[in-house]
Amino acid sequence: QALKAAKNKGVRAGDMADMTKEHSRAIDEHGPTDNFGAFVQGKLDQGLRGQALSDAIRAEHAARGKGKGAIKNTGKGKDKDKVAKERDAKDREKNEKDREKEKREKDAREKAEKAEKESKDVKEKEPKGNGKGKGN
Image 1 (cartoon, rainbow, N blue to C red):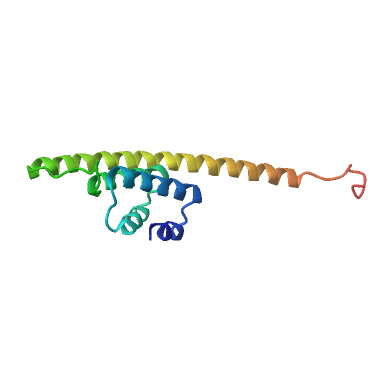
Image 2: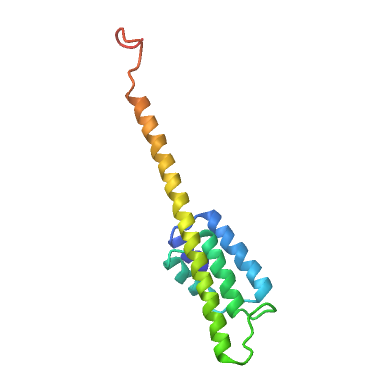
């Protein structure tokens, strides 16, 4: 379900490879999570891609996983809630920074592509031939 959702959202193959690698690593460290596909769909809908998506997967496994590294509920609900809120705030901050970085990289790529296209357009407008007839 996660792969299908990512494909439908137009996630690049390299990002998909990173996501599945992170998911596998997170399962090894923290155990599986229930309804993982729906989780990924939700994060894709929020616009997460690349490293931001991998970080969200890792955090989700740590929070809800069933393995050795899962966060344990050890009494004192207020402390548990506080820790969860702090973790969520850190995750949101990191995800925002990752989205900003991805946007800067995308803008730089688009700028370079535009410059390349403009360069091609200028070359195509240059006269052909030797200027003495039909260009032969």
